[in-house]
View 1 (cartoon, rainbow, N blue to C red):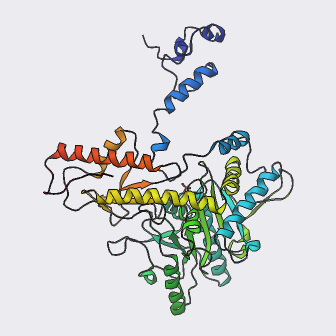
View 2 (view 1 turned 120 degrees about the vertical axis):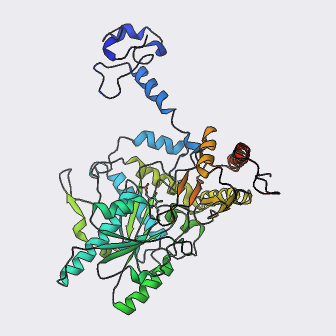
Length: 468
Ligand SMILES: *Cc1c(COP(=O)(O)O)cnc(C)c1O
């Protein structure tokens, strides 16, 4: 018989009696546990551990998660640092001055990688991820614009931000939470990427800035920052409006410096005033770390910096949360030391190689047409070829792949092109050539299954398939 509530436990609170039973027979584990109210009694740690552990294994396998951009593997030395430092709160800078100093070194390293004109005059911070890093980039733009407008005696009640419709959701949040009008430049079949075309129709005196994305979430492509900046130069010449760029380099901020060093997208472009990245994406650190850096100290209004003294000392802080983990900061620095420039380059190039190996073979399969190849960041997307089949969709394929553990998401393209369904793979450090080959075989099998299930192949001579 099922026990439905903890109050029916055989042993009540007598832990010693319960301990005599093996783990899988103890109270709680072999029964129904309280889920939505805190249990009245404690339970043995082994039992609680086993319950939580067993429930968590129902999650997908992180190593087969090709949906996420976020790090799913670090080496054993990184794991050791994590285990040694998970108790550090990054805000306790006075108590943990070494962690604080390392944080500063990390964003200075980023500033240098991104070609800040004077690395001694930059400012930056770690964040929880790119989402709050983007909020800060946006807030600095907004505050700068407000200060300028106030000085000119002009109203500051209608700020707007210009960005591609394909932005990551954090930018919609920024505009919503901070009352900024989002002016989305739509994705069209002719201009799938935001490239500055028609930009003059979107900007005006209330524009706080323009966002350019290095590594669009939907397809991995880079928006051409230099071209967007050139368009803003033209606009300034015509109208006098001096509009700055924030680059969302959530992914590309850690790829381009190593693998596309010639590409000018960073502080080499004078209009770029701030850049964010996710340390937990291609910075190769476990979830919980992002970075934002400003071109120079002048680009960050001093009014956004808080000075806190109650932990001892005068501590300037620039963050939305107060407490957050410090371990990820140390892991980021570990990676910088461990890998160095050449190590990062090889890891990222390895992921790019696997991404292009996958995209080449997926692009050759009869049902698919590539949207991108994985030669910017190691992320690419494809769609079903027009007319291949109306019997199955990429959502069906995603479901079939999930049966064998592979998480390869299908999703609609951004607004305006949302009837286009894409499927995407994010290749990360740890996705080997062999795993990629296993995935290609599985895709071939599942496409054949879907084709067989839904009817004859549409055209003579078209065979789904991968061989190598
Ligand atoms: C992932 C991503 C974000 C959000 O980053 P988090 O680190 O997950 O908060 C923002 N912008 C882009 C382009 C992204 O890819």
